[in-house]
Structures are given as structure tokens and as C-alpha cells.
Amino acid sequence: MDAHDWEQVESSEAAARAVKAGRRGEPADTQRSFMPAADYFGIFVHAAAVTHPCHRVGGDFFDYVDTGWEFHILLGDVCGKGTAAALQAALVQGMLAAELETGAGPATVVAQLNRTLCRRGTGERFVTLFYGVMTRDDRLTYCNAGHCRPMLVTPSEVRRLSVGGLPPGLFAQAQYQEESLEIGAGDTLVVFSDGISEATSRNQQFGDARIQQIVTTHTGGTVSAILERLMSGARDFSHGRQRDDMTVLVARYLA
Image 1: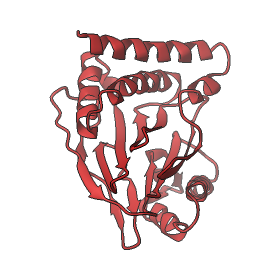
Image 2: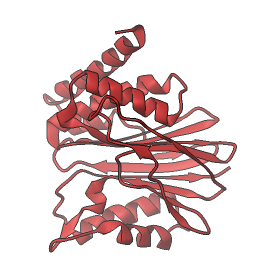
Image 3: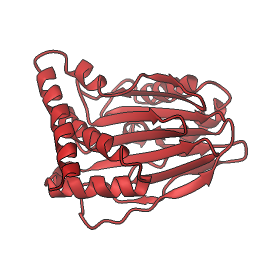
Image 4: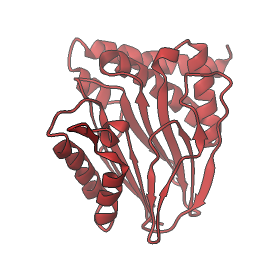
């Protein structure tokens, strides 16, 4: 194991210890402290995100990092629910934080995360992950590792983002790809976990069609408004009976 691997392990295990410590206090507050502010106003991106665990803590997480030139967007969903999933989410967040420091592209970052998770023998708790990078030269580059297909909303279309690979943590030799798209001012990226799309009422799921209808109907509003409409729509549809962690991240390119 090289020095970089040790950095990943130390960062991940520190996060896991914090979650464990939270069990003696406020677990949800501890987990929430690992994530950024719900609303973020950057130089060229406005973003908003929220996660609501099914239990006190959960396996969904989100993050965004602004370097001034790049805006990194992450949303992940660890298999399972509750404390065990939250611990794994903390580990994954720590590993990703270390990988983002390398400056590598989304596919390379996800591939390294996959190798590290497989090496640590976490196959029973794999993670689906979307990792995208908006840059000030009007580009969005992303890798979708087995996650729900996000929606990129432009004036002319709603594009589904599916290029990537398998969920990290399953197969050490999995290959990952990334796609780079041109984006323009006002284009909006909507990322969500399956707790939204699979919210259930009378054996019917909320589904992508309802998500897209909400997104397109409110695309002229703020990112916070889109987020709130999606969360409330899924909750109302399922009559408040939440069966999975629910997370939404909306990012609008302003440059």
C-alpha cells in the first residue's frame, strides 16, 4: 500500500470514527456535518442539495467542491440503510476527498475508488455514484457509476446522463468511462437517489416521468425551488411513507 492509499484509509477511518461517536450524541447531525451547505452560490454555479435518511442516519450523501475554475458534484447511495450504510458512506466520502485532490478526471477517480473498495472487501455494501465536473469553459464532464440517470435540462432538451460503469465496490477490474458535454448559461443538472424515483404508492413508483415533469415545469425557478418540488412531490406521492433515503442535488451553470 502506497502513501496515497494510506491517506485514503486515514481520511476514511477518521470519518467512520466520527459517525460512531455520533451514536452517543446526535448521529444525524454528525453525518450532516460531512456534507456542504444546503445552498451554494459560486462564481459560475448555483447549487442546492438535501438528503433525508429513511432512519436517523443513512447511506445517501452529496458533496460539491468549487476550485474557482471547476465545480465538482458528487451524489452517492450506499447499498442498505441505517448506521451500517452511514458508516460506509463516511468511508466513501473520505476516499473521494483524497482522490479529488489528485486532479484526475471523473472516470479515473471512480476507478480508483472502485479498486480501493474492492481491496477493502466491501462488496456487500457497494455504492452507486454520480460524479460530475462543471468548468468555466462551458463543459460538463461526468461519470455515472450505476446511479440513477441525472437530467441535464437545457432550453432544447432534457438529456439523461448514463455514461460510466458499474457501481464501485463490486468488481475490481470494472472499467469506467466519462462523457464531456457542452453546456450554456442556465443549463440545470438534476441528480437524485433512487429513494426519489422509487417512492411508492399503491404498488406504483414515482418514476422518471414524474420527476421530469416537475423539473421541466419549474426549470425557470431557482435551484432550491426545483429541489423542494421534487422532495415534496415524492413525499406526497408516497403519502409520507418513506422507505429509502431520499436525496436531490440541483446545480445550475451561470457562466
